[in-house]
Length: 372
Image (cartoon, rainbow, N blue to C red; front, side, top):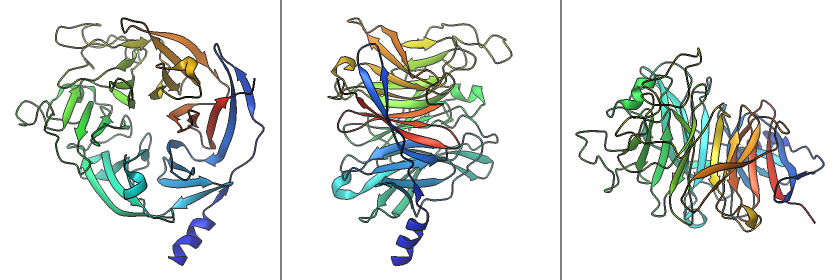
């Protein structure tokens, strides 16, 4: 125990203080603070009940940020940290205060290459290590290449997990219903198959599949008010999408798309086909969406119900609104180029936004309401 605590302390990196910035947006002035810097490609964050921040770094580290230090957490399993792969998302179990359980995704290596996995673990009471680590899911076909793993976790009201999986750069896999790639999967907290999944008999599709035809969905979230599931997905050259995945439906990639291949050639048959769903919204040119939340916090009532999406390529935060008929339109692009590649976004318990920058020297940003 003492040795573990010493190792964690030695692994601490100072959090560099920087003056807060006040930035004007269309509806409200916001204050942006750097809570932590010196993080190596931070991918996700969760706020613990005691106010500390739990952060994943893609090379395979999980850190606890508190009181000016970013301390390493031991017990993280080996991950395949190549290209876009590594330690990715983290999510707290709804009963975390009592059971200390969390979930995380990572790319792992095995026979045939690598693929996306989901793990369950417990965070020790002293917050220095993971215990009872168990892999509860691994995509059924591993492959070569180091791109398009997904992957985010959205926890449903019943505690089950929705996890986004990319097509691994092999686009035809997204239309193979006997392949996990290019899908949203739905599993229980122990990795078993929920009874309400659309293909539970496994005959026409793998039983864990919820929806198919996704290219690289790196954002997934529930609207806490409507319980609707949303994804933010990378297109190719153009065609980044917002979707609302429903059971058993096909979202078209690569048969239909609003983008083109990187060499400019046409993708699939065009933009529509019977039996395939249209995106709720798409960007052309691409912004490279990193993550998505539906804002329901108290700090920014002006944004209630809006979708907030981080962008890697354009280094911005996109705010989308919905009209009375459910049509999504882009209303605003915030922080354009101000802080670098924006990877992830989380709404903190107080309604502030927590944003990660995907850089060698990445930062954890806190966005709150500026004093009037």
